[in-house]
Image: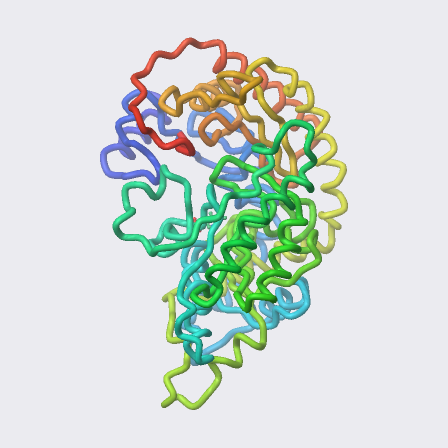
Length: 468
Ligand SMILES: *Cc1c(COP(=O)(O)O)cnc(C)c1O
């Protein structure tokens, strides 16, 4: 038995994997990874895979990055962890100072949690609590976009709208206002992203006008709806939204958990709209993809509404055990150093241009409705019919065929439903981008040529993005 097989068997005897129908593994191998090196992951049989999705969108500077490794090792010898209530430490102070410095003006306070979903919970709870503390307790509800994703905990699911992740749990969820997404894949033929995004804002304006007295906050994934299939829109929407939130006295929550740290071409997506949200949620690439941590930045005005004598019970009494973990902070500091020292945002412009040219030919593919890009994210939408943009039934799992082909060829491409995408580490080379484009093209050919027969249940949800 190969080493891979033996690890796989031991794994399948005891593990329950995330976001997985475990029965799939009767056919599909689990791939045990022995080591990482830059953009490469290597299994126990020595086969290498180019990590085209940055290990679920976290890894920006490669695996086993020397500079991040060293910083964590140094921190490890100094202090591994201390509780953050009543105590503090050097890496958390330095990281907070730097996050305040590099995010848009006005975001002056940093609250930490230990993953993205709990970061979203914090922003939602803080917004809700702010209105209570400010004598407007009726402002309790949240506005979200269709096709949005904000994490897996119950309140985070409530503000999400990807059927695959939320349908089953509907009875548990908060009641939110859902506004049609500005998703530019849906724009009429010949219309620009900007015009479509601007037009779609009318729905948001209407919801805010009708219900602002009961609305605490609007939450959005700026510029890219990630788990919803890498759907993209124009920054004008964020500008209009900021302006309307001011007018209607409603908080604006930017979930930049996936798009923060350079993914959209700027350090943070909100920079492209020139705005400051009331809450900025960061995670994923925050630690370079090394350790779980999230940061929620907010304004002094928000902070002051909680600042009072203890007996007024205005404090935000929320905690997670590993809040502000020093090792995670050290990884984040090393990551920020690399952004600065290597002028990464500037260098990424060349890489992004190369991703565009390497994938441009796919727009002519008879089963590809769109190749779209925002910064360092490229998505290719496979469809059953190009002219009408008719999607493949999700039960056909076309993306899975691309995934399997890519594994054979030595690439980790994990499509969202029928959307094949690249979200690579920023240390990728142009030759490696060409390799990915070649593998994706072959995979798309194979996946779209295959005739698949599956029973399609009536009434199956439309935006059922199967990540497997
Ligand atoms: C991944 C993600 C989350 C959830 O983060 P976790 O660390 O997986 O809990 C929330 N929002 C967006 C936009 C994400 O991509």
